[in-house]
Image 1 (cartoon, rainbow, N blue to C red):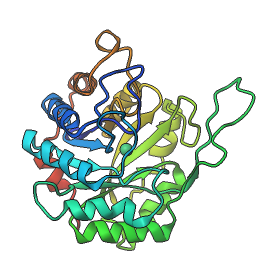
Image 2: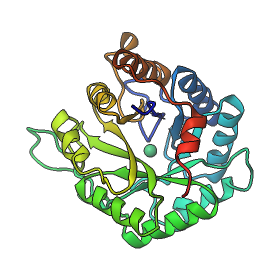
Image 3: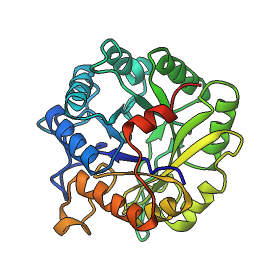
Length: 294
Ligand code: ZN
């Protein structure tokens, strides 16, 4: 079986309540990234945040400073976000990646492309109304083509973020037509905690995605779960030869380390599951060799 690739999803736009270990500043993110790398992660994914308030930021300087500090601290592959539904302008989504490419010290290794346009309804059973009336994450095919081309121009390798079975069909189409590489890392997103746009974060929700991972391309899939624990799905993925994307950006993991684990402690838990399943852990060098434009 392939060695296990672990992507540490450090912070997203997640607040520090209930877990205060979510990193905000470039220094905090870099320290956290190095600890995750030491625990077994080969990829680190981050969002720029206001260092004081944690508010979402699109500041290219913050993105670059964070990458510079991560590179200085460890050899993990660096994957900044392109923003979420909060960023709609194409230049704002990819501009920081292009600026970061000016120096090897700040260049992004990977960039995530969400292969779906989705409404973002918020609802938990029992609530009288569905929230998120105006929330839409726009990722038209044209936008994805332009983002992929601009990422490729600066040597950043795309990672496919998968929301549903349609995302997987689009992945196959974009890879078969040269927009995306034919060997690609795809993160299968499940969503819980009130966000009902993705598949449920359950074994059935994951299985429905895994069933449609395209076989005509060399797709290496990982499971992610936003809004609930990913540990059971991680075990299933590890047993099936899949990979794991996990971190405090997605969920606080109160079941670990006395209730308030660090990202590295979450990664260490995944590594211990992998050891029990007999999976070895991939190094950043091995992941870099696997995922190149081809
Ligand atoms: Zn993210």
